[in-house]
Image 1 (cartoon, rainbow, N blue to C red):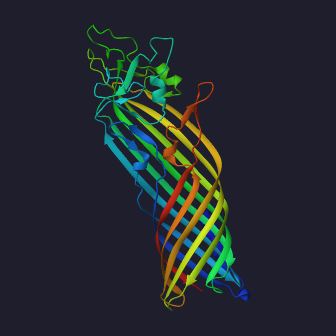
Image 2 (image 1 turned 180 degrees about the vertical axis):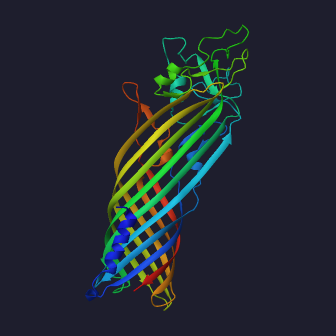
Image 3 (image 1 turned 90 degrees about the horizontal axis):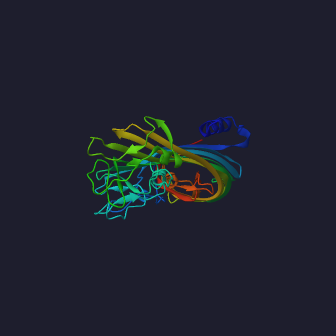
Length: 403
């Protein structure tokens, strides 16, 4: 049963409550306009044209909240479901310098004007620095890079679902109230980074390449080999399983690589919270309320990270390596805000408010990009990063009906 269905069932129970208990009920529907902070700081590109995940400005998105409750004597019971969908932002750029794929970015022979580089550990780096006894697949004698004019782009999306049930003292008995409740929060995110450009490889000792006229003498390899890519954990998923070739002036060829790095996360938090609220009535038509909630949650976080290399130009080789992982973390949550009620009648009020939600130990999607290390046997290993901070805030406008 979905959280929305739980809320609907709760409404039916309240409607069927026996009148002997003299229950007072209320229902509220709110339009939400929420923004969120960005605690991620994954470096995508470093160099003269840097790009970082902290550059994402998420902005506001729309959502809704449904609340239903009843007062039972000196106490009250309230259920609430909220959803905010569509948080997103994007980045883009074009590199004026080459994008070094290995550790030769400081080689002035190959890059007399310097080079940019990827700011995170990735499979392309592992492949481009692959050491082998075979001359054909040994990448350490060459500098592999994408040409100037490489296009870069980043994206970040997210959504929030929040369901809670709170039991506490009645708002009709005192101007203040306290309560305890159960809360389920789900945060799902996606983030991606793309670098797409022409590929080349030159000898790192003399910048020689295929098709040149001696001297200098071109060393073997002349590209990024299939063996190096598979050693880095990539699997060929289409096209020729032959890696990528350097530019050969003697033959009109240009291989292109579109490298997409993608992170996905799903956080599901369950826990208990304490709540407090105080309501003031400065006039018969206006009421003002402040509230706060503090909770401890168990976060069952899961996520994945994938790297896709799509060939273009004169090569159609496609490679993929992907990882999944999950982790359980304890999370602390704080939710507080203000709310105003304009009483239209004794039973109908217009509402407006602003609130903040903070959650610790959240798996953020950009933090998964590049979060791959090598284990003791040299195999790539991905560990979910679930140490981020979620900060959401925004306003709401709604209608409350009482009976």
